[in-house]
Length: 496
Image (cartoon, rainbow, N blue to C red; front, side, top):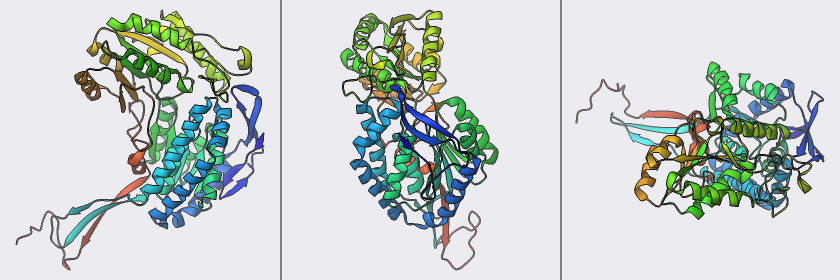
């Protein structure tokens, strides 16, 4: 067990509150991973002051020099990958092969930032007047508040930290209280890589104090949040009152469509990985499986047999397929949705119960669950469950499948399995989601591409790739007139 402190201005600092909270292993609740300060507004203000002080000097560091620090951070992360992955598994439970992938996503994001500083560009455009040039550049905004979830303890924080800092901003990050250690260790990596004091500050604590403090601070220029749509709406409302920049990556109710001509074995593997990877605790998880009628009965038989072979266990065991839910409240929420599905008439195909056998007795395990004969209007087909529950819906044909797919308030990720090129392209055009997969599951984002969704999944920003840098910078348009005379655009007409 490790005692953590807030990381402010390059130093580990005790909270002035004197309060603490424990971070426990969801696979073995007896194990305390770490003890963390339950910070208050005074702690947050210290971090904001440090970030404000560091900002003028940090923004003046050239882009390539800032990106060199990110590249060095990537090199340190590569050395510590296995150690960090094991810590992540102990923090949030997902199996070790997945936390290795989570950390690799962070490494990839750092490497991308290491190159971005040498190529990030503006535009040079012609002027309508002679002896005049026009161009744009992107500049940082100031001090940012970053609020991250527990399901990707390293990948999502790096999606925010690296573009935010590489762009010349400074930041305060509030990690999720279920997975605070991974962010704390990442801050140490950046310090070792040469990040100046005060550029990145970590303040642990709850949303009601630290999260709200970030939203309401006049010194915070923007907030980047990943989490539920309900909390995202609250953040958008508060930020809107002071016109803070606000980036929201929110919920999902992602569907995988399987058409009659699909490779059913491939579609099956995609559904298993999409629905039960990370124990279903992904915003991109496959929570709806929409199957065309001619192959419906065959496919659900295949699905049931495959799901029942999944092995639950401590994520540190290499042979475990599915780890625990992150905490007891999450497991209770999952079970309540199972009961709702039964009451509304869905047919329980498999699962639907707490699992507490063998090594799983001390953790928050739940059997992978599949409902068949779900109708599109049922709550389990409409609401984000965020757990290992898959709702299977029968579609009459391709058009009906697309109607069902688009029939939720969310629009993050979608998937379609088909060997019909025309239908694949029609699906790409017609799906109301920010991410579309063809013959692949709904999960599997890559760090150099935009990530985000439509409708209640977000507010239009895209994390990942070059688009993340657009969130954390402001466009500046520049006119340079070297004519030596007053020229009046749209009034003066140039004549040869």
